[in-house]
Image (cartoon, rainbow, N blue to C red):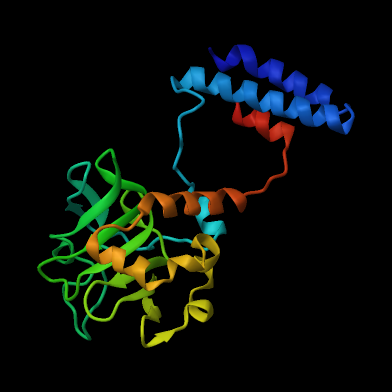
Length: 243
């Protein structure tokens, strides 16, 4: 159905319901959202029950997640949905590292997640490995058209079981199990998103043996993003989004 026909009706309804008592206003607002959603579903050819894992860059930014400012090469890595593109996000591993931010650090990398139009998109796990990669390393974060969102949770997959953080231009450890634990001090954002249970040795070990429950933490990530959005309902904005 074309928006030419239904949008004016929503606009008129939005103006009229503003004068209703609060209880009726709440009910009417929910009905308006439902009608709007159904109209959009018909227009886009989708169904109301289709899940959406897409998080806008604005919402990510409002929660402290950003992307690299510079343009990086796109690298093809392997995974369950076939070859998929990600940016060359692995930086310096040595004091002088000419291979930084190159595909030679990802030419043996794998991913778990969704490949959309040839690029990794959504909450994903990438195991970074390559001919020029010094140490195999897991990266857990959101990807937008192949771009890694910072900060990302990381783990070196050799030596002492560990978890850390990769930010733009720097990285640091959260916990080296059996040695020290500074997760509460250094990594409070990730505890807030995923819960303290993420920072356990058995959980970190699962990143090494391939049994990490990505779906469980994907839900936690998306729920956190949803909860941080404004819950204030604005009928005018609802109508605007229906156009």
